[in-house]
Structure formats: C-alpha cells, structure tokens
Length: 369
Image 1 (cartoon, rainbow, N blue to C red):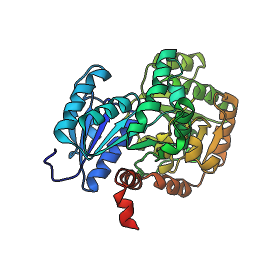
Image 2 (cartoon, one colour):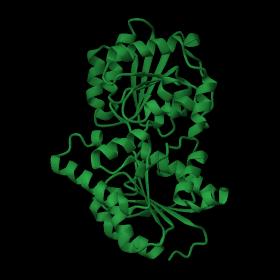
Image 3 (cartoon, rainbow, N blue to C red):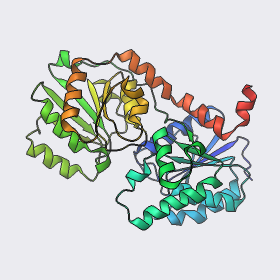
C-alpha cells in the first residue's frame, strides 16, 4: 500500500513522444496535481519530446522495456507495491495488459481504460489474426475494467462495431486542450497573402498529400503559403510531391515543434486533412487561437468538435477539389475569432479533468447532490 499522503493516480503510457494522446495526459496530469492528487507516470520507455512538458511534481517511473509485453511484470510489481487509487491505461494493447495486471495485483483501486483512435481504421492493415485478437481482447478484457473511456462518440461506436461491447458501456470524455494561446498576427489582408497551417505527424492517417494537392488548386485563385508542422516517415514522399507540383517556394515542412502557439496565431486558416481521427486535438488548438478551421469529415472527432459544421467547414475524406473549395470559401469568409475561442474553452484541461475525476471517483457526484 502506498505511503503517500495524497491520493494517487497512475497513468500508463508507451512513452511521451509528441502524439495527441501523450499531450492529453501531460495536460491531465498537471490538472490532477492542481486538484491535490499525486500522479505517477509509468512509461514503457522514458523518452519523447513531451518529457520536458510534464509538471515537475509528476513522478516518472521508467519501466525500460523494448517491447510492450515486457512491461507486464514491472507493472504488476508496481501495482502490488504502490496500490494506486486509479490506474489509467492509454491505448490498446496497453489497456489489455494493464487490466490483467491490475486484477492479478488485487489492487483496491479502480482500473480505467482509455481509447484515443478509431481502432478499426488504425489497424486496417494489420493481419487477420491481429484484428481478431484486438476484437476478442476488447470484448473479454474491457469488462474487467471499472471505467471505459472513449475520446469521442465515434470512437465508442467503432469499438461497439468492432467487438460487440455496447457503446453504452463507455463514458465519452473529449480531450483536454490548452486554450491559453494568445497573440496577434498579421492576417492575409495585411501580409498580401494568406497563411494556411496543418499540424500533425507525417503519416498516412494525416494525409498531408491530400492537403498539398488541394493547396495547389487553391493557388489558382489566391496567393498563399502552406506550413505543415510535424515530423514522420513520409517526409521524403511529401517533399517529392511538393517538388513535383513546383511548390517549394510556398510549402514548408517545419518538422516537429513542441510549442506551436506562434504558428497558429500567425495563420489565417487551419486545415485537417486526415483520413481518420480519434478526436482531433489540433482542431481545438487552432480554434483556441481564433483560427478558422476546415476539416475532412472523418471518423471520429471533427464533426463532434465542430458541432456538425457550425464552427468550421467539413468536407468529404480524400476529395482534393472539395477541400480546395472549402479552403477558399473559409479564407474569404472567416469565422468570428471570439466564437471559436469560446467553443475551444469547452475543452479546457480544468473542465475535462473534472469530468475524468467524476467518473473515476463516483462519490464526488454523490457529494454534489
């Protein structure tokens, strides 16, 4: 049993690379600490661009395993020795490993599993046996958790279709996003050209190739530049596409940036071109800076964040012509900045952390009544 005076929440992640789920729990851990909890961050590997972003009071535990399955024994040992009140496991298969370890440890606390992507799409290229294992482990292991979380209604519905585990068995809590982005920027009307931004890893899911092709079509109508913030395995492929379309003078791949606030506030339009998402954190980040948004209408988060298109245009997945048209219309008729900032405030870390705490500690709700 832990000897800490504070109630303890443990969070189990692969690492702190600069992905959306990792950002979520960097923000949540800080919010939990502000609420008076102690937080242990268990990492399969202690690495990643976001390590320096963690609140100094978060206790990092380095499992130091090269493979996910190698984390089971160290996790079981941690649970038996520390008995946290809450263990949050993030992303399959960590969710399955952690739930089994939690039950074997006989911890007195509560087990929470949290999924952050549209699993049927993110595993589409996996083998048939791997897909079967995904579906079966969710069906049989997830019911052993005390709380099951999904970051959007779309993710919960996808899990139901994939595994047969009813959507009603999940609590949907949107991702917390830092909405303190401030700053003024020279917009296109002052610069003489428009600035369009995309933020995301350079991988198939994000489909920046679609955005680059749509941008080339947009240039037939207006003068603009495109800035893509992120790094990944497709850099070379995207650089070739940019060269083939003769866009080297107006498309920039900046690489990964831990702090993208300045990039948002200097931009006129944010575009998400993904084939699928679990939520779409970057949409909220852009809105918090008052930047107009265009997004593909992909599973699962953008339509929910943008409230069926009320806060930004939605276009079909994979349609470069529709994306270029929506980009042009949005630059010509931008959204009201304050309306966007007000919507982004719905996803503040403080609000979302309280939603987490309410489902993890049901007695909190009883105290409200």
